[in-house]
Image (cartoon, rainbow, N blue to C red):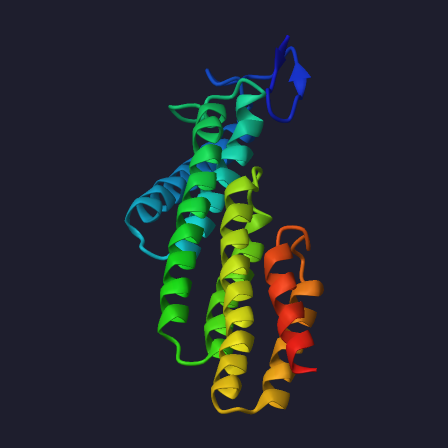
Length: 219
């Protein structure tokens, strides 16, 4: 008894193709496979050639989405393409991770370079934080978050040092001008900042001791 691999109709009088499909399913599958393969090929070309992170990631996702759709046919032993969809998914899932991680690294490098050129601490921090938003946007697409989290930590370290140095530089300027009250305010702000950041106080113990000594000196 013949049985269609897709619709699963079966009958003594049912005729199926060499692909195991009935006359209704065969043209539908052929058209579907042809369209998906074309989109996948176009996507691979853009993945290789595009310089835009968003384009490469979106096309990689599109490629994998269509490969998963073709996988439904493969799982029913319906011929689709060579290499098989399952092999392509196995190959391009890690490639998508690499594209995202490499792209995020480039974004962080550009953001920090721009931040270094900024003239004010606020602008430096704002420029750096844009990269954090980009990391958080794409981190959900990753299975392994370790590289993205390392990049995020690098930016947080930069913004933390920038903010702390801003307080200290102002304090030193006020000291130079003999404005002890204003210098005291900056040292207190710096101490409050360190005490309330995400870094363990034990790691910043030397800085805390120095700030507390300065505060005590100007009280």
